[in-house]
Length: 217
Picture (cartoon, helix red, strand yellow):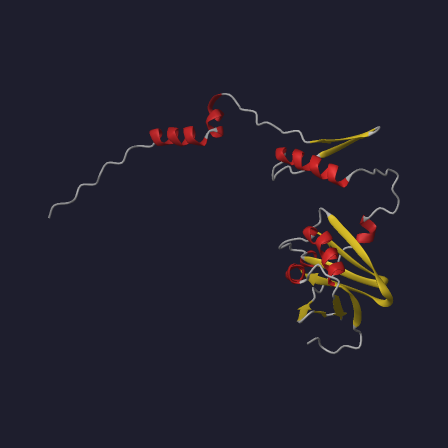
């Protein structure tokens, strides 16, 4: 059970709502980062809104949902394992989910499950400074069309350079990924691009070992 605390903040929403919030941002959580406060998800309750934020230092995801009541402000960081377990246990239904938050613990009650978790003690980055307040360029397009285009361009990406370039022009958007080719150097460096031939050359240059003769007593 959750430890008694006079500073508890309690809220209620549907399992479907909270599960959707987690799904929208959890991909951006860090994994085993030395900045331990990034290895989780920021949960913010402010007035009649609940916000969730995740970042790994390179990307940031933000989502929010409106509540039915006004609540006191509180910010907590849920551990990564807690977020993943809640995503697995929650169902896409309108059944109620009760959340109780304290500065050190979080409690989730839904169905026959009571889930209690410790919180990450740390200062989450100021995400509001990262999100632009004004946008001088606004583009509207089909989500499905964009997704299909990104999947086609993804074929040319790799782990070292996974990014693509977006080129905007009047009435069109181009998604470009230029694949860099490795230039082969002439001469002796050519073997470095061919592990098999390099290994064969080394085997030929190594001196052969003579079998050791047993000493006769």
